[in-house]
Length: 108
Image (tube, rainbow, N blue to C red):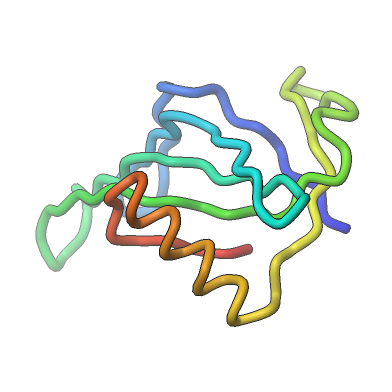
C-alpha cells in the first residue's frame, strides 16, 4: 500500500523548471475496483530547452481507503495500491486517453 496526498485542485504547484496544476480527480470504476487518477496541466517555463506545456494524468493506483486521514498541512490522504500489471496499465491508459485526451499518463 502507498499513501496518496490529495492536492488542492486548480492551485499551482511550483516545480524545478516550471509548475503544474492538478485540475480534477477521477474515481474510475474498473473490474470491480476503483482507480484514482488526477488530470492536470504541466508548464515548463524555466528550462534551458525552451517553453512548453501539456496535459497529464497521474494514476496513483487502486483506492483501498479513501481520504482516511489528513496530513500536517490539512490535506486529505488516501491509501492506494499501485497498479503494476502492464496489461492492466495499458487498458487503463487507453480508457484515460479516450476520455481525457491527455498525452502524458504516468503510473506511480
